[in-house]
Image (cartoon, rainbow, N blue to C red; front, side):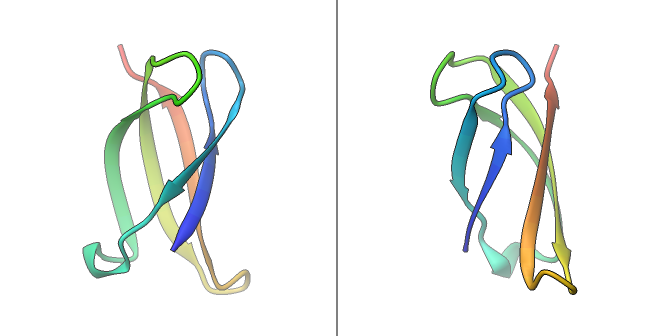
Length: 60
């Protein structure tokens, strides 16, 4: 399923693919497609939206 996150560094929108078989709550690091800096993603399933919501924060 497609989702997106906003890069914590350059604030650009990044489209990602979320693998539903990994569960309704996921955490991993993904590099920004624009500035290449690492973002720690927290991804969860939102029943009301029927979609995965991804939130990015700076990975130090």
